[in-house]
Structure formats: structure tokens, C-alpha cells
Length: 419
Image (cartoon, rainbow, N blue to C red; front, side, top):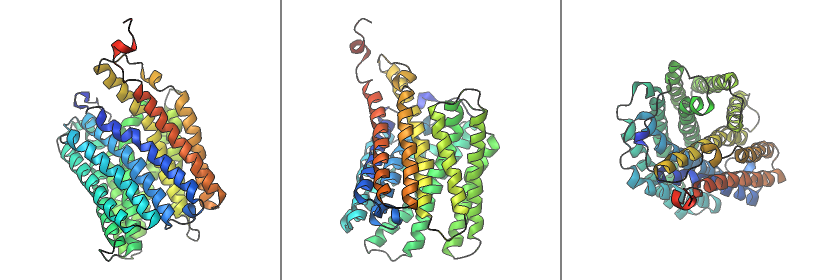
């Protein structure tokens, strides 16, 4: 199912890198906010501090990383032109960064003007992003790329749904729109996390795991079926949930099965590969294990408040682990590829990012997930410790990526005068 990549359509290096390099610092900010707010941010999903931390991670860390990854991958995987991106990319980046910060501040301090401004900026950023991606994804792509491209299309549709609901919720918070806020908040979270983040990660994995992990290819049928089945289950759950119908659990069960099948099958591919596991494989093991744990917790009988635990497992364990591992692969590769074409004396990808760097970051990241889970179960001083470890983990990722990028600033003639 994997196809030869169309590197002739690669966008300018600055387009994806501005998103990818800034993403970790939103995670660091979320960790520092958790240190400041402590147990309050881990006691309930509805606390102002919890909402602020959650949106710094989802909009700031994951939003930036996924926007940058899509702006890089869509033209290369689909073999299409990414029009308007060079002009609109900085606008999307600025609006997304500012909007995420304002939204976190608005939640934390209860400032209506912050929420209004954040709503306008984030709506603008995502509308422009969806427009750029939709135009590219609507073009005809190579047949072998269709499963991955189809999954990306479906993820963008889920993003559009999540953004629309988010705009409505922002209008409610400012008193501009009456809304069943509890129900629509849950629907918004489901479409943003399962629909946008989940389906996108699943679709991207079909390309990047065989490419970077040297595994066997995913079956074409599986790649075609899983994303639409997952979205179909999500839509069924949404309708049943809003209509208060018992068949909502059929949709929830279908989503759980899809995510579980994806995690188990990817695990099997990683275990069967001939090459010994390296640190990038560890990130995938942690990500997939967290996803399976998330499904198991979700399917557990009611009686225990598990929303914070689910959030830690899905956002931190599944999504952030996958993104961390991919950033350590994608960013050095982009630097190497563009550096060669810019006349730089470019070291190899492994020299740009030795395995020792992500090994250290992985240890911090894994520790942060364990501590966040402990804090979700027993809030208290553990919340502040978990926040500190999360901040260190994300700062380490940010510094590693930035140092690799700065190493290519000089042209070859300045880096090696004897050449």
C-alpha cells in the first residue's frame, strides 16, 4: 500500500517547520501551568485549570504538530500541489498560536474578551487550514496513495465538525448562544480527539510506520476500512447521545473496535519486523499500549469518574507519544533533505539526531504519563510533580529539534572552509 513519495511537491522547509518546532513549547507551558495550579487541574475535567491545560495540549502541542505534518505530508504523499499554503501558512500559525494562548487564559481567569478573541482567531486559523488542505486533497492522487489520502480527507472533515462545535461553545461561553453545553462539550471532545486526532494518526501511521520502522505494509483493505468505520461509529454515537437513545453504545463500541484493531495490528507489525527495536519504536509501543488501555478503561463499567484518566491516556499516552516519535524522525529528515538542496554541509539524519537524544526524552515522557495517571487517580502533590516532569519532557523535545535546525543555518562554505 505504501507508495513512492513525490518529493518534487515538497513545500518550502519553513512552512511545516514553524509549526513543528513551536509545538513542544505549548506542552511545556501546559506542564508549568499544572505545576502552578496543582491538584485542581487533575480533579475534574470541568475545572478552569483543567480546560486550560487540555487546550494547550490539544490546540497548542497537537494542533501545531498535526497542522505542520499535514502541510508537509499531503503534497508529498498525494503528489499534489499545496496552493495558498506559502502565503496562508504564517497566518494560520500566528492565529493558532495566539488563539490557543488566549483560550487558555480565558478559561483560567474567566475573561470573556479572551474567549471571544480566541474564538475568532482559532476559527480563522482552522477555516484557513481546512481550506488549504481540502483544496489539495480534492485533487486526483496516485492510486496507491488513495487509502492514506482518504483517511486524511476524513480527518479533515472531523476537524471541520469539531471546529464548528467549538465555535458554538465559545459563543455560549460569551452569552451569545443558548446551548446544551454538557452534551455538546462531550460531542466536541469526541470529534476533536477521536475524529481529528485519532483518525489522522491512524491514517498517517499507514505511511510512516512502514517507512520509518521498516515493517511490512498495512493491507490496503484495512487502510481503506478503518478510518471511515471509526468516523461512522462516531457519527452514530453522536446521534444516539444527543437523542438520548441506548443505541449510542453501538457507535461507541464500533469506535472502540476500530481503535483496538488498529493498535493490535500495528503492534504485531512492529514485533515482526526484522530490525531490532530502537527508541522510535519505543514511542510507538507506548502510544499503542496507551490506546489499548484507553479503550479498556472506556469499556469498563460505570461507577468511577474516568474522564481525566481517559484524557491522560488518549492525549498524553496515545497522541503525544506518537507525535514525539514522529517529530524525532520527520524534522531531521526535512532538515537533511532541504539542507542538501540549499548548499549546506549536511550531516546524515542520525548525526542530526543521534539516538541518545530521543532516549533521554522518552524516559521523561514515559515518566510524565505514569505520574499524570497517578495524579488523575489520587490528585494532590503528584499533580505538581507530574506537571514538572511533563514540562521537562516537552522542553527537551523542543531543544533537541531546535538544535538540529540551528545546525543547518550556515552554508557549506562557512561550515567547512577546507572543502
